[in-house]
Length: 264
Image (cartoon, rainbow, N blue to C red; front, side, top):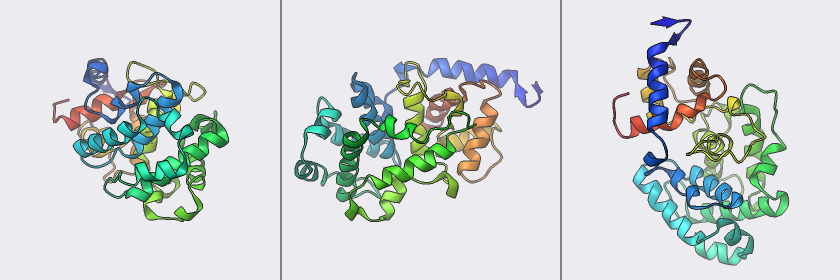
């Protein structure tokens, strides 16, 4: 039964799956890597890197993230702050993933080093462009992404791979990986860390990938045909009918139901 687009049956299923897909269902997922750490900056760096490489085949994503975190060792934060540019170049020049070559990986780690040396954390940089009264984080993502690209070494230029790392919602991109990173940082439960408590979970937008697209189309949470920002906002707004303050909490369950080819 539906009233004003609200389905009691769908609400029950959403809440059931949200509780079912808890920490025990974490692996395999890129989120498993920041959970290896307890220090706030280790988690922030690991989550940022893990979200950026979270595209393509899941098996390959896990392989490349294992390689990256084996380089980081016990502390991504200590590695990045204490390593010279020469060491980072040597260590990360072998890290490749689909559209990213070794130079992209090197430049990303050098950019993170630059951010932490200049601002102290990724959160501090993000909060410069945070608008508490905004409905979504669209504007914040736009300006944050521009700033991130400016932190890259000058010789990075405007390589397409760097543009791909930080797409622009103003240009219609769904910004799946950035929305994923923000979900991990802002929300708080046994999966998501809630480290950026200054940002409201109600402003988050669901990270749309092929699994979210497929399942949400089946659930009639979107009428859009293309996975773009418009679709991400439409799904998010429809999920707000079931939790207006934390609609993106359903993301992990919906994604993994699609990923694992389960029935919703």
